[in-house]
Length: 584
Image (cartoon, rainbow, N blue to C red):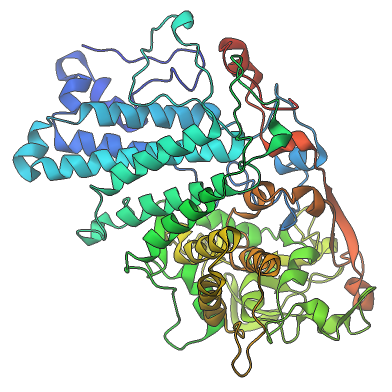
């Protein structure tokens, strides 16, 4: 009998290989116990083990414990002072006490996936029923999940420790567990090869309805494309700012030499997803651009979804963003900076409209919500907007974020928008906290629109094929219901060179808003310092015209060491070969 126990050494790497639901197979009374070897000879227990490897995918709908990545940039100001994001925004964190310490948990996921990969071969029940094909598929799913956990660590911490297929014994001596971090490029190359290997055995589409939500070939290739895009970006591609970021043996952890071909690799990887030919931008049957954009998230299992989390808590997202009149907590406030970023219905920037001059908004500031592009109305709840859903039945209500309004500060305690706006994107009006009604749907983690924008960005950065990049930006704009770039009637002049790169970044900011991209995008572009600091909204301390004053609503502190989260000091103390991130 193998007994698998938790120990405390470098918690992530030495966590138990057993997952919660598998324990019931191992921790029963003595005459009914199964060894871990017996678990991997049976189909049901093996599938339950794999299901629990999936459980390490974090729930991005949870605004308190998991999803920090929309409240710590210029996208949003979160209402609650007790929210952990407040510590990030005011700089109240350190290597000894950092919020969102995901290092141990993701490494437990890595170890669990590795254990599964190493032990499923020879499963008697699966071989008898399904042959080797299903075993190969399950191993490929676990291989993807392991790569995904590594990729999430890399987004937060930078270069990580790559363990490969080796299982670290739970009772290994500390001296045997001194592991150095791998250079970022080495991490990316390893995960790219792992995802390519997984893709060989993953299905293009689910074999049956119950398999929706399982990893597909498209998900593996899309994750690879995302990682290669990051690796090609200025943060990781010839970033001499990190020339001193080295292992103890002097190995640079961030590439010091710019490699233009990384952009080509990123473009090719994104195009490989597109060329599968099984995904399309979701479009409303009635060709309504607002419903089309909202439907990309709210319509389950639609043609745009590539990677989803089937079991989730999107209820939390709905409730935190819903108005008080609809039973919500009224606290996810988009910033004025983001509101200003949305285009007008003519496809141009609001700064090019009569509403704006060199001093900001004109006296027509109330009209800044008029004639905006459809994605604005699909994404932002604003003062005076009509709302129906949740606890609001019968006639719709007008949103009132002003001081004495129904959803304003005077009547809300902590539960009021600090910016005078609420998120509407991916918020289901069918969710009702008062009646415990949950509008369940898959949580979209990767969708085709991201692949289009990844492809366009990589092409524009590589150079030489701007027309192809513009083609895929235009597909995004066409679905959004705004004019495209071109020489035809009602089209806008085609941007080129640096202007095209800026246009793609602006499109990405709008199209992928609130999808956990902005924090990582502005870091990899090395533009983050210019967008942090004072953030603005409407004056929620006032009513009437006083509400429509642009005021500072928060300050999101930025320091250079914030590019990477610190690895918990306890991990550094245990592993003498693991260097800390710069500035911590």
